[in-house]
Length: 301
Length: 75
Image (cartoon, rainbow over all chains, first blue to last red; front, side, top):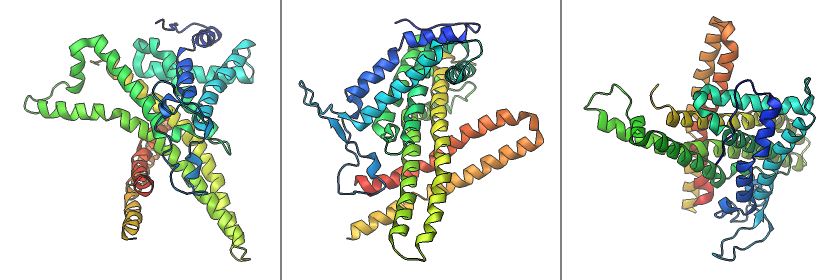
């Protein structure tokens, strides 16, 4: 496997082009989403007759039914898969068009793509130092996928695939396992010293080891539930207020119908907050991945 | 019928952690505002830190919300 490596002085155009020429991780997520591998236990909220409830937006609908011929798994192409495909195509398109007509004075698309690229690069280098450079393309892909998944979900009638726990958990478990493997490959048994802060009294060492081990193993759960809960809660809240407005208008009362202005105003404010949260959660997801990576790469500070 | 009522009550109780998240956010932002007032030249860096921790603190409250959803829809 070949990593993308570049120094600090490499021009942005060459860096982005190099990234676009090796879309390994994008292709990986693409395959996962098309074949719905990580959505096998879907239909979480599909049961019951909760039509027009705030939860209805999270129902996984099948677009194209496919049955796995070997094991009989349901690998249908669903609306979640569709938006995962979109979330991997849209950023690649923006980057591609932004770099194609690269000029010294950047246009809009080029400015956006360079800004995102530079932002993630700085984020990674700040957290891990130079040893994190080989993992840049993975971090960048992860950030783009989560960011565009969240932002595409903000469009009306679209689907937020990050509001499915199985998808975020899949991402988190991939990060957790790969970080652990990187740590063990780099440090061998020395990796265990991650669980033992230096300067601990001998009496406390076994207890602290267990605590640190548990807090390490809980990482994929907290990482995935953080993203999933934020998206779920935000979108549910928007729909609850929307339903309230519809109910007030539909009541037919002269006194109640004008009150519907309040929930509609609240929706406008909350949409702004949700866009902020969408960007913020993508940022936090990436930062925490970088921090975990740093733990595995640089054991002793 | 009684289990239905118990479910609703439990779901209501399960969102109580949001109170803690609210207090936490208040403490966080009061600290940020204080330090910005003391050292305005740091405000750019502080804002980045504030947003990171805003997301981290908010998430703890939302765990409770997820439990409420689980109680309502998964059982």
